[in-house]
Amino acid sequence: FVAGGATDLDARAYARLLEQRLGGSVVVVNRPGAGGEVSLASVARARPDGHTLGTTHMPGFLTIPIERQAQYKLDDFAGIANLVTDPSAISVHAASPYQALADLLAAARARPETITYASPGVGTDDHLQLVLLQQATNTRFTHVVFQGDPQLRTALLGRQVDSIGLNLGPVTANAENIRVLSQGGATRSRFSRNVPTLRELGFPIEMASERGLVAPAGTPPAILARLREATADIARDPEFIRILETRFTEPSF
Image 1 (cartoon, helix red, strand yellow):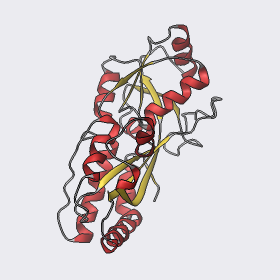
Image 2 (spheres, one colour; image 1 turned 90 degrees about the horizontal axis):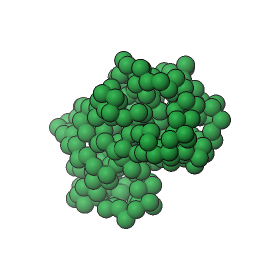
Image 3 (spheres, helix red, strand yellow; image 1 turned 30 degrees about the horizontal axis):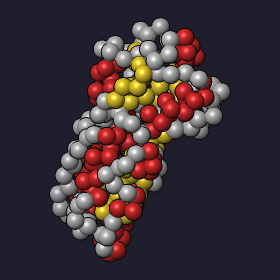
Image 4 (cartoon, one colour; image 1 turned 30 degrees about the vertical axis):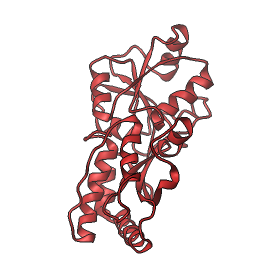
């Protein structure tokens, strides 16, 4: 995804702390496109020497190779760890006529395929949330794709789209002129206790972005062990936890 989004900010916080533990420089490279597929494919093709890692974005990491002929397979990777969980959310402009999710769904039901819903990519949690919600409510939105959080927020604030699917952390951290209608967690987030879950609203849907790290398959076991050890240490680091919480994101190692 592009610079400035939640996945990117997670990676930059992790990189800085990984440098301290490994004693070298860690450079974050953004390769946006196809809901994370472009970036993951570049990691799958990288030399398995521990010098190239990739951010994962669940559930897209798992579902992209299922739903289409992807540029990678799951066995192209060795897992390192998951670091965070961030519930999906549905938001509208603060001046939108849709005061609640029921209002947005009623409009989509009355005018099929005219209400727009933007997400950061096909196969991302934000897109899959829409797919499940449409199935549960017999509605049809028009899905619009952007390459990351900043573009989604800009489109919403510019009234170019009616609604966005974007994780709760980014919309809470940038809440001005945004009304959050729902969140996809099993229970209400401690960071947004006033926002109802989809389950509370009567829809049997749970969806979140779970973000972590992988290395190319074939990375030597000793190198993987060192990376996993360093990552476990970072996950417990109060500084890393503080960074996540300032962005309203739950640590989830």
